[in-house]
Length: 145
Image 1 (cartoon, rainbow, N blue to C red):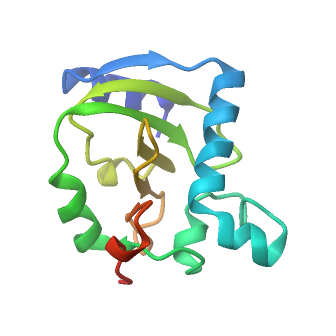
Image 2 (cartoon, rainbow, N blue to C red):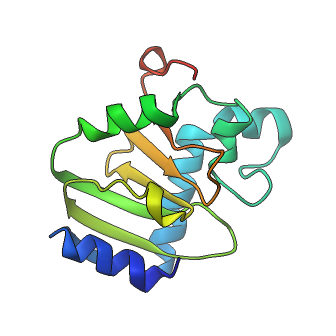
């Protein structure tokens, strides 16, 4: 999946898309990691596992909703400002968006779609057998599997 295809998909859905500058992207990715990967970091000293941010969920360092339960919760979100950030260290992209957060499962792209205040996060993956993963900053709302 190319980043251009992702942007086209967002724009076709009438989501306003603004690319993030590299420094801003890196800062936001680190804020995401501090919010959602703190247990991974506490246990391993690393912020990322095996090059993917979403492994904080797949290896159960962070409680979350998974697969259909994650998609159902994500679908309930209203149109809002949000971020789309790469969750694979091998690909760099980030966008400030405004509109209904899109379901990206069929794109098989490694991306975190996250509220601008980081209060919720949906992680999409390139792998059919993993994800998606939905989590909030309120741990009680995150139920395993």
